[in-house]
Image 1 (tube, one colour):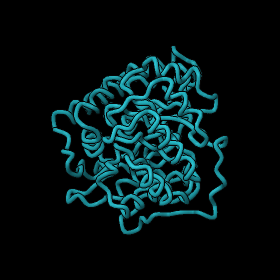
Image 2 (tube, helix red, strand yellow):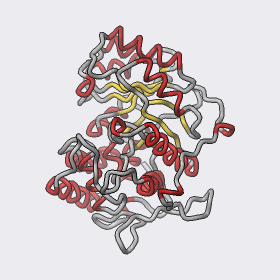
Image 3 (spheres, rainbow, N blue to C red):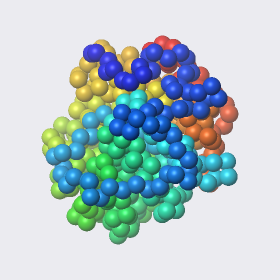
Image 4 (tube, helix red, strand yellow):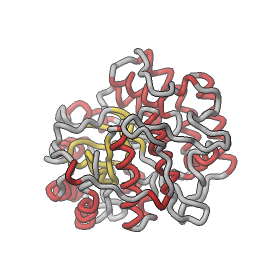
Length: 360
């Protein structure tokens, strides 16, 4: 499979440990976009939630594409734990420049529970503006463990430009029955003007969904796909891939099996580890979508050690530490109750990235 050409080259053009666009002081300098012709770096005071309600086309389940790699962006903080919108802007533009199909703010990786409502709006505003300038897609995490609050949360974000779906996690902690989970998604979809992408992650929710429940979920009007993160490529996932409506998109939520899931009919991945080596991730998923095992398998094997290293400690601690070390964000700070990535784990991940970059 021919690798896709990207502005400024691909990760394969870089030396070990290099981050494309880094300045002499180690901070990543985002590229100029074709649409604006100006530097995309900005100060916190200049970054505001930008909405384009009058320019947003009518959304239909047929028009949105979930093919490719979506990055569930971290939420950068300064050392005093204040929101760092400048670093977020740099990060969003970096991964889009390297080929990501879109961004997913306010996910677990983005520490959404630790953000105020105003901070959440600011984060989405930065991501939406980057997606607009790069003409990429935006998926916003809006799920809670309460049906009414999930519906209300969706109303906050419905006018953002480039928005193609809400990512709605199955209700966590309260552990409803399968029928209760399906009723939750049915109610949320009915209340939303934006398509719903379900998120099945049993180790966080405490509730597994059977193959039968997953297939029923795929048939709910307005639920257009699922981020499937069950820890493996299991029989229930394979049943879903085989029996869901053709227009229903299954995205990998477990980074280590993303290539395999795509080969079996998935449309791509929402992958936290695609914060780094994004171009390699994009090439791998492109190979999967093209049924190119020979081209994609070496990329998947190259990325495996990186994936394992980035998840050695609770996410997103190590990813933030790596991004800070690479100069993409200013600090690896997380908000409590999360703790920063240990120096050992961050160094191990950086070494894995160096080795993977050198071999690709």
